[in-house]
Picture (tube, helix red, strand yellow):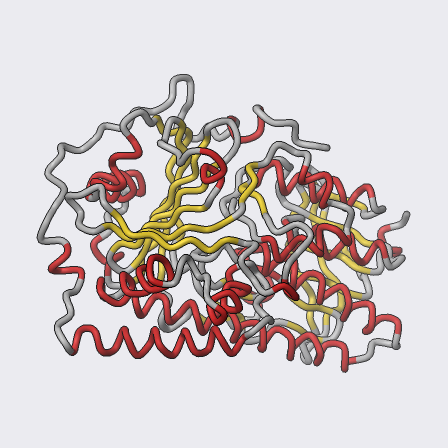
Length: 471
C-alpha cells in the first residue's frame, strides 16, 4: 500500500488509538496507526471499568481479555481511616453487579491490568483487523490551514527521513502529549481538580482475601487519596493523588513523597511490612485538563488528547474507548457523506456533554476531600448506613461508577449537589477537619521499604516478562 492510500492516520496506539483504528478498519477504511514508542511499554492507569465491555465485544477482545490472566475486578472499595495512629477504617464498596436490572451486564466485571500487556493486546488486535502499524515513528508536524482544516502531517520513522502524509482524516490519540491541543495552545487546567500523583509498583503488599483481592482499594487522605491496584503475579500498583494546597508541601523527590505518605498512616503502613518496591517511582503533575478546541475539518482528538479528569474512579481507559468509538462513528459519517461537517458538530456535542457528566461529580468529590467530615460522611452513608450502595437510589447512582456515565445522570447530579453543600457547610459548623484528624500521628517508626533485588531504578521489565503479551 502506498503511503498516499491511507484514508485515516491515527496518532498514538494506546487504548483510544487502537480502538478507533480497529473500528474504522472494520468499516472498510485503510488506516495507519502511528506510535513513537515500541510496544510493550510501561504505562499507568491499570484499573478498568465494566462499562467498557460492550466495546471489547465489538472489536473481538472480550474473550481474549477474559482468558489473559489479568486480575478480575468485581468492585471498587473506598476507605477512610478512623485516625492516622489506628488500623481501623470505614469502608464503602461499589459492586459492579449492584445496579438496576435493566443496566445489568452479561459481564459485570472488569480487570486490573498491566498496561504494557493490555495495550499491546489492543494494538495486536488492531493489526489483526487490517490496520497498518508504524512503531517508533514520530509525528514532527500536523499541518493545518488558517481555518484549522487538516491538510496532512509530517512523520519520521526510526532512522528514516521525514515523510509527508495526506490522509482524508487525522485522529489525535497522543494521550497526555495532547499534540493538537499544544499546537493550538488551547489546553486549560481544571479550576477545582488541581491534582498531582506519585506512584510505583510493589511486591508483597498485603491483599484482601478471596474474591476481594481483586477489588480496587482507595484510601481518602487530606485533599486526596491513595490507590491500591492488585495486578497479576503479586504486583501491586500504589499511588498517591492529592489536590492543591496539599501538593504545595511535596518535595521534588517522588519516592520521598510516596513513602512518607505510606508511613504517615498506620492503616497504610500495615500493608507494607513485607513489601519491596520494583522499578522507579514516577510523578505526574496537573492531572485534570481539557482542550478548548478538539476538532476541525479532517481531524479530531480522543481520550487524554481531548481531556483528562482524574484517576479516582478509574475512568481513563473507559473515556479513551468511548470517545474513540464515537470518533469512529463520526469519521465514518464525515467521509461517507462528502466531508459532512455535521458529523464533526455531532462529535463536539457528544464531547461537551461527556465532559459535564464526568467533571461535575469529580469536582464535588474533591470539594468534599477538603474536610474529613465531608468525605467520611460519604463513606459512612453509602457504606455502613446504606449497605454499600444498596438502596433504590444508590443502585442507580452506581451505574456511574461502572463507567456508564450516561445512565441515571439525575442521581449523580443530586449526589454532587449534596456533596457540594456538605463540603461548604462542614467547615462553617466546625465539624472537624483534617487538621484535627492529623493531631493523632502514627507513632510507629517509618518502614524502610527495600528495592527488589536485581532491579535498577529504571527497570520496569517485570511488568511484561511474567505474562504472555499477545493472546
